[in-house]
Length: 182
Image (tube, rainbow, N blue to C red; front, side, top):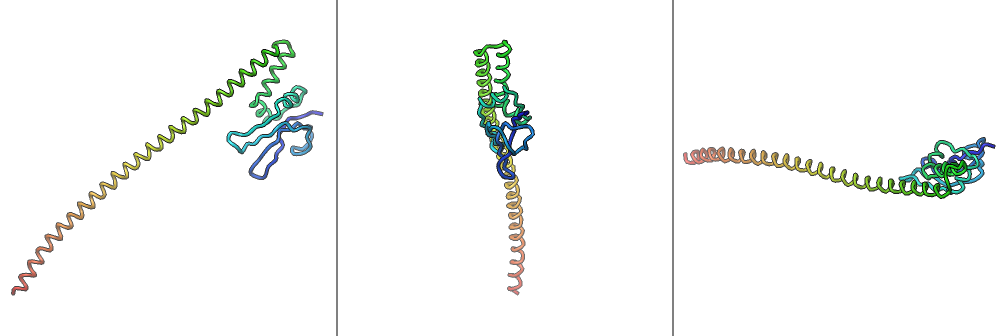
């Protein structure tokens, strides 16, 4: 009976949720399974993965083959690395203590990398916000300058019209006075 470690889809349409299960390779995707190893929720950011590490490691050691996606999830959690290191112990290349040291080192590197990525993302978001604010400020200054030019042109035009109406109103007023005198 070839066993597979694979995902079993749950959740409703448009919002998938998966159980990581060990199942017979001939069973349908969402059918009968031997053991549930954990869950995977791709809808959260970053994706939420919860795995029973020891049981997943056991099933890998007894020959269960993970599917591509399950392999990726197990690799992300370090199960495949631990399995690889333990095979080195069986061959005599490593000791249990060396395996634990290497695995702890890998976990530390991974946590440092994740924290650094979080910091980098935060810094880049701040820089993007600064950049957007600077661009908005430039646009607002350009709009204000354009508005000031328009108002100055309108004021000049209005002042010119006032002068024309004053000049024009003086002449008819003078003619009107002459006509009334006759």
